[in-house]
Amino acid sequence: MDTLKVQGGYPLRGELKVQGSKNTVLPMMAAAVLYKGVTVLTNVPMIRDVYCMIHILETIGVRVVFSDHCLVLDASSLQSGEIPLEDVKKMRSSIMLLGALLGRLGEAVTSYPGGCSIGKRPIDLHLEALRAMGADIQDDGICIRAGTKKLHGARISLRFPSVGATENILLAAAAADGVTVIENAAREPEITELCLFLQKMGVRITGAGTGMICVRGGSGLCDTSYQIPGDRIVAGTYLAAAAAAGGDVCLTGVYTPYMTSALQVFRDCGCDVTWGKEHVRIRSDRRILPVPMICTSPYPGFPTDMQSPLMAVLAYADGISVIEENIFEERLNCGAQLCRMGADIQITHNRARIIGQKELKGAWVEAGDLRAGAALAVAAAGACGITKIADPGHIRRGYEAIDQDLQMLGGKVWW
Image (cartoon, rainbow, N blue to C red; front, top):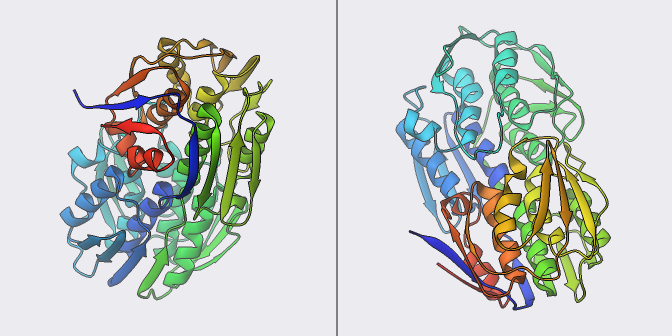
């Protein structure tokens, strides 16, 4: 069985440029189908989710060239609105093609998306919004068939600031007639970046980064080139590894104003954390301090994607910490794998009580999802002995080269 192996006990030191953002590039790839022309994206991470989206786009008629982190998408020959079932099951981000294909072709066929097993993640908000914009959607619980003569603007108030629903609405609204207003929109950095990208394509948008976004659709679109920013969650993962293993690490190529909540938590853990606009340095030379309570919440709160790596860090704390998970109910499952390494983590409903240990030990563990796999690598970096992480395909969905990155910082990691 393929495993990621980590020999712990080696402090991490050095400088590393962070890869491009997974959660930023995928909706931009979907947005490219709106335009009968060429879109160029640079600093694109070479990860499984990107390759899966490429396969979907090629299947529906988009011409794709991907080389040296540069992705060229030519959607002038888009032929089909039907997304292959096998690809949909591989990653959740495929659902955002629904709004884009409705906007471009007036029809789309897909199924319920797959991805990581971290909770229910319903798509009812997506479908309700698209219906409000004039789409006729037939949903049998497995297959989703959507069609429209023409999408129109609407005022949509989201019950929850869903990132995926906000992205789908933005893509549909870009092609719709009239004005679409999204109330209680997600404010995550990836939404801001998508708005900036759509603006560069020629879409008129106001309110990016706020809870109310206004889109005036129907504008003529144009060829666009856009650089993908550094991945804030990958950066946070490597900061966590440095906190767990100790050392002195500087990360570059990541926009730190998007990371404020996570950076503050690392300071609360007793790490020396300093940063500029596009770099962050962490120094950790003593035992981690416990954090009495940290709650995940929509941006600008502490991100759910950082919850598992933080749990791995707090497993080494000198005291008791509590994490409350308010986004994805099954994301706390990582705690059971950390306990195989000697962690003391008690999970009740949506809370994890973490009794820090002076030492964790290498063990055979399983990566149940993308961020859990990364968290196990974080814990392993500070553990005694060798940890073998099974099912590392989850990690490859979002981390281009976690083994090489940690090796560059002095870690002992190999496949």
